[in-house]
Amino acid sequence: MTYKNCKKLIEAGRYTYDRMYEILDLFLLVGRLNDDQYTKLTGMLTTEGQV
Image (cartoon, rainbow, N blue to C red):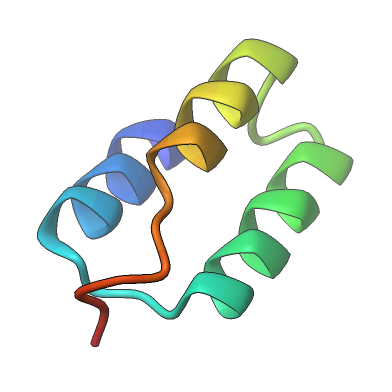
């Protein structure tokens, strides 16, 4: 569920780069994302076209 929600936000561009990285780091730390999911999501992040 966490992975899907984060992916939707990233695909919609509804994030700021630094804040989303912090959130993904936290989710990885507490076990809400696994290493593969974290890698996929951080690979989707860009510094352009964000809210």
